[in-house]
Image (tube, rainbow, N blue to C red; front, side, top):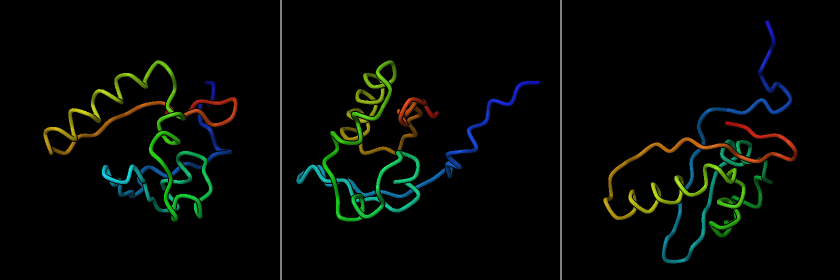
Length: 92
């Protein structure tokens, strides 16, 4: 049986973030940074949301953008699953 795991990433399953729509700034913890393969100190200071959205794989980006928009308008919690580009690899 073939092993499809990605042990080199050791990606945790949940990270926390706060996104200010007014300032277009996302601040996140170390776990969230690890999921996206970003520098934790960069996310601790905050970054624009486009930096994060640009890491979503092309085939998932439109759906993720639409569902994020719908979530903002409705104010209801939602879970969105998508692939993230990590160098030459894609992590889901």
